[in-house]
Length: 207
Image (tube, rainbow, N blue to C red):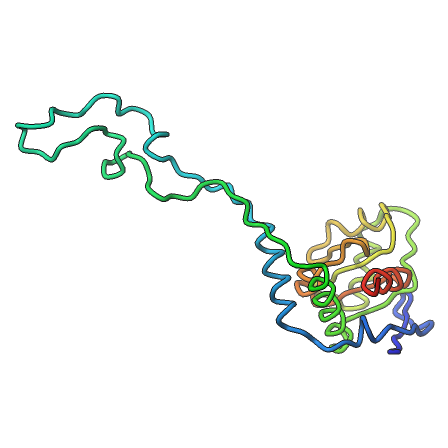
């Protein structure tokens, strides 16, 4: 079992917590991390680009000129791809880029990035984050106290006060433990876990 410090929002160490080595002390597997990040980015692609084929372009109902005798190349429609404003050949059309990797691979990748954050001393565990009312200023003061430049906060349950207090702060993102993912962890320098979310994450990854 690994042991990590638990802080309050005043950056004072108030306790220690045991972390499962199977989740936070595992060997880093870069291959599965790459596969999962690639899958996540592919799934985020809109796939809405589209072009018009010769059947979609307006006009072109009449043959431009007679077949023979003009000295010009024969042509049947102005919608031909070789004409200006004609259709596009093999152009992009709306499609779904998303695909899936196995649940086992996703778990391995998540365990790898969590272990890496702990190893790099980029994981902070907070006992809680008490706030009685919405206050971006109060939340920002805590962020500045810890020196976070780009941080991902993971909470154990829905908390409108915390979520609304943090949403206007640049480079700060807050998600619930159920939504933790590889890309968000890698995309933020620090990951901040509320203490109750630690056991939820361990339970989900060891299930």
